[in-house]
Image (cartoon, rainbow, N blue to C red; front, side, top):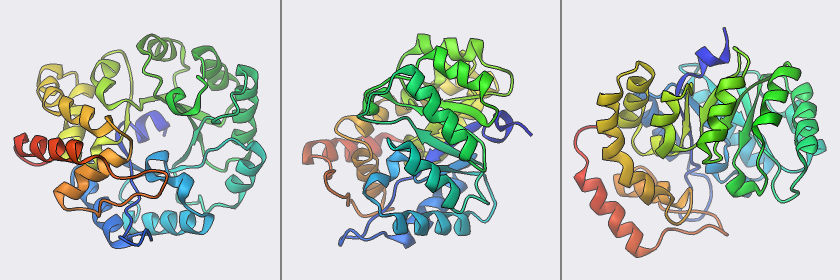
Length: 298
């Protein structure tokens, strides 16, 4: 079965909850996983950038991954985040991480190095050849400092067999449409932009890997399913109800915004690891006021 079928719909980029002493709060992680599963999401992403993975030790990452597999218990697919700016080290991680229960690996493009498009192609080709499961590109130039062009994405899709899709988060709708138009039939295209996903599905996207679905799993995944069914009028009602929420989520920092939402809902402690810190009192107050406006299940 193609990943376009397996990973259609809403994936959730899980946060990593911390206790007040900054250690991992596995009880809250279990509650969060169950919350988003009960909310109807189609799959989970463990150890993504939203999970503050850059501040986790390798031991902690392994613990989070094994715990996530255990709690999910094969109910939905799990995608594992393994990315960075040292290709050789990533190859070692792909060869050593317990990926037997993983559906795919999501690999954020190298940050800071600013490789050329040829460098990006060779980086991902090398990772794909080392990965025991299909590899998904993750293009997020606002964080990495370098865009994966549509040309490079399509070249990878056509020339590297184990590259199965992309999480495209460039905020460039024209680039997104070029990828959807030119991709091979098997190639999964999901969004990384919660606020843009409705028009992107109208343009042919297969779904989204979402931050917002940590906070609003039922509303958000329902909207995505309506979009994929072509019921855009019904989907728009939910989209515009959540639109202000998207702005609040990302106003100061991700995942500081989503952790503030989840703390207000009562799911996690509002704790991040430096250099990230909780949102300002002003933003936190506006998040609390916005949550009061939402009706029905989140």
